[in-house]
Image (cartoon, rainbow, N blue to C red; front, side, top):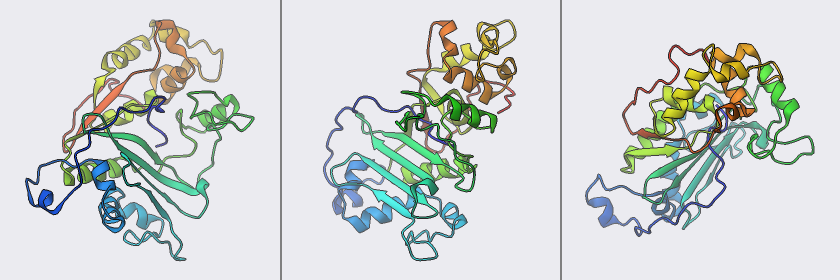
Length: 295
């Protein structure tokens, strides 16, 4: 799994300030939800104890990282936490070395204007696999994973290697593990649901398989499935005009995702935008917009 969320172009609305977490608050109703900002305003060591629950210990152990100290076998820091006081976001990442290129896990959660939780970012990369520079164009400028500008050569290579749009490396195949951990964390702080905006068709499909439902976008997903069937407008638009519009792409998730990333939704006079998904903690929505899909 790579970057699965829309890049935020506008700042989020200001979140209401619910005050600090106090002992009396902790001793009160255990179902009272806490926000990320409230947790970020706690002392550093308490924050660290709380946010340790965001990374599955078994995932860290896979890379010989101590899940308590966050140190590797050479006693160097391998997990990094950004949770500034007064901030409404928490960012946590893990690497197999000191190099950012070896980052295998990254997660960002944030408060929203309704004191709910947004899942802004989730990266799960295999650091031992080949890296494709779809995140930068040929001049080295950031592409925002193809949402602002594109590196067509790198994208074609990534597609040929079996990756989906937005992926720079093979996945760790750990999304269920991590999302289950997020469910546990949110239950601990009294939050009942969390939201996200899928970056690509492939990421929306993955989150369907992980129990998410659509707040917005279910009709678009259904239309996309119908129009990729033989005789449909999207199926006809797979005209072999580029590596991302091959006729064989209609019947699998990654193929559809690359065509949509390439702008094929123009034939429907729409685009990949404004989709929003929600996961209720502990529940599975059973949404399936692509029956019997092949990834």
